[in-house]
Length: 280
Ligand code: SAM
Image (cartoon, rainbow, N blue to C red; front, side):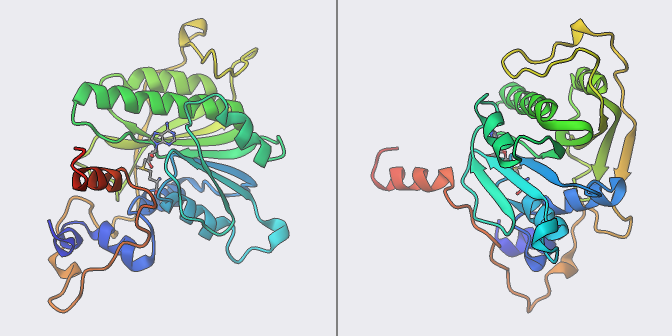
């Protein structure tokens, strides 16, 4: 598939390049923020699974740019992959499932708790459905446990989920930790995909709960509060439909646009090198 054909098929892909976002996912966070006002009063924020960095770009544009240095919040972004730098964002190349990652994040906040944790984590898809689903669930659990360790009471956690078989167990776990849990579907997320985002507001863990990355929360230790979450579609109805094809997005004369920030160290680069040197 050529670049221009993807531009036609996916209005958000084209718009991301036109507006300078590193990935089309930027629109998901922007639309979630329109609905939930996520950034209000935020002083410390963690972006988990952040590469190539379009969510961090949104955070930087909304919270850092045009803000006097003394009033700028601290933004820490974490990913397994290296990330090109962004204004006002501290980027860390770390694994969110590793217990050592937590103290490193906290050290950037002077050991103060965060107001907001966002996570758009997803594994490299293998095509083996059960394995992919399992790894996705592990990333989400790691993000949730990290959030429980870094958030202040009343803080907010936003994470990508796939509304698969076991989603109600996840809602139960989140409802133990947060007063309000909503399953939100931004317009830029394809309706045909199981992807959605849990927006968890008002962090309020049960009494006696001590977050521990080495012994993550077990819901059977607590009385279950509820295993469903209200569903909310968000994003302006006038914004493009992520499943539609927009032939007008690329006119005969318009050229395909280059990616805003190509990956700094993509795994396929190594694969190409190995293939060239007959190691594959
Ligand atoms: N939100 C990003 C953006 O707007 O540019 C896109 C995130 S991308 C969909 C998913 C990311 O999750 C990948 O960059 C991947 O490296 C990262 N990831 C997966 N497992 C991880 C882990 N254990 N620790 C840190 N990052 C991880």
